[in-house]
Image (tube, rainbow, N blue to C red):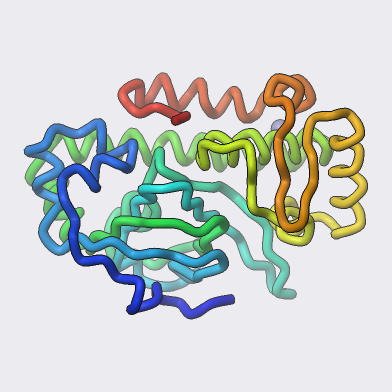
Length: 254
Ligand SMILES: [Zn+2]
């Protein structure tokens, strides 16, 4: 795993209201509300596998993806194995929103797919929420939508077969990245879905044979979104429906 903090050389100082609006959650705010978040915000380029928050850490920064960057909340077992509980992209935020301030994090947060992120001190975000009921309401509703995703994952992992779960993962990642080409390896996907690499290889081969995906070195290319939706369980669609109901002003797709 790469170092816990973003690379200092990758810091880009200029943050504008327009850059804030590249995150879909922040884009739903008025310019005056976004202005509350501008002081102290910076932009960081995050490499894949960067550790953003570890279990037990105080959440001192909140991250807002502004590109195809995706982070995963993962749970670490006593034997060191990990599995994914939720993923977050441009439609959301990572950190203080969910833990509501400087509380210790329960899950580990790692960067799944690299990209740009706004970073805002959690204390500043909390102060802005105290000033603006609209900000407070937006983040409360986002926390509810994220909880729905986590709850759906629990049921999905317990009830649905791996091929359906894999299709669900590919669909949700495709929506967040905004591309049908995903830079993920079989090994990484196996880890996120909590299965053996050989099992993952078989499942991806079956999806390839059905013409739903194509595999290249370190990449999965989605050939048929409709086909994946048909082969997936309803969990992705269900989470999206709830998100749209709770946060109608925030698009879930590019
Ligand atoms: Zn499912």
